[in-house]
Image (cartoon, rainbow, N blue to C red):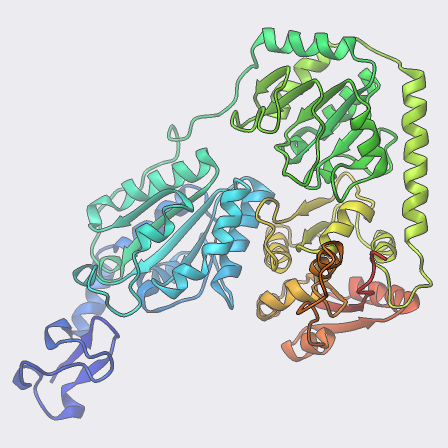
Length: 586
């Protein structure tokens, strides 16, 4: 007696149990689960199948070996029917770590955050249909912030493509606007070719590459040889044109009030940015994402620029005669004035995006800034430096006044200043979107060795927790802090269980003001009534305890200090439920 499996829903017809030979069933018989026709059932030969597995490698085996050979260390996802072949290949592979999450959006956001933190590529793996669509927000985050990600999705069996079968969507069409590369593996012989093409596109173009693999193809034999990465990825570096460096140096030498604006792209050579600022007597302002470029206490640093930024940074850029923009592409929230500008960026599409510039140099900060330092003259602008120091002092007084410890519920600025007393100088902070993130940009005193990971251009709520999970995986010995609100955390809170499962000792600060705080303020600013921004109360500390982590609560300044001290002494994952003022702006 034999067993037969439905290729659509995996229902098993067992001749022994049914007491009817499968071949003897009438031709118009249908699968009792999904209504598939009899011809979509295949015979299961248990012993033969087990022996055959030992004798050759499958398409799934080759996919996993190939991405490992090209540096993929982590895959995030949820196992499902149409991805089981690849999941099995991951189980057997010892070089890649697989992390099971509770929602596919978390998998994609973790992969995106990994690219932002390391510049390298991680993968997310889901089933066809709903698993694939759940990746979209995280993959759009990667697309917008130019983070390399490999998305692998299962697909319906090859014979059923285009028949509107169970969980089938047009995945090529769905992923096309998100991805820089988007293909289906339809034959075993194209496995390594398409996988390596996908990874080349993701790494070189800094974006999302998507590969779909039909369920039945995953288990077919594949004799492809693994392709070595050596000689396959060009080194995108070189010397900036000498004439452009000379033009830039001449503009800097003639400027009386230069300002350096450093973005995310300047993080690779922080010391050179400081060296340039000192040599030409210029202040350094940063974008939000570029905040870790320089220590907040550095005399050259005047704060973040833009809506979330400092009055000193805004004043100095508004009254500058030259902006030196390094690794910053600017969103419409940055508010950069139209001034004579030198712009340095690895992406030529970014240069001159907001307004015309005087000199544009395509290259990395690490390549270009040292050349400019060698060309410019030493300049000691005493009166300008004194003005910068006075503005910085005024701004620090403003921040100190905002950080009032005696307010109850607690105000965001005070929490930010107090947090700085408890976390390590090389901690990693993963930010969510909303007032919590806004306050980090404005009020948190960043240290130069600390890292910040966030959803920049997409601004997706719920980023904080996935970003913290992967940051802790990458740097298991470092402190990792997730700063989030009750709105953003509520979107992904199920994946706190992921931190518990994998013993990731992240510290999650939930700023619980029972509101979509930023939206409430925007309604006020537009003279609308406050409506549908209030959030149902949730005891996030108790939630942490139920999940198997540790939950703490802070309602006032003494409770906050106690919670911080206890949280950072504990080894496991912790949630601190911080009761905050919904009217923190007032």
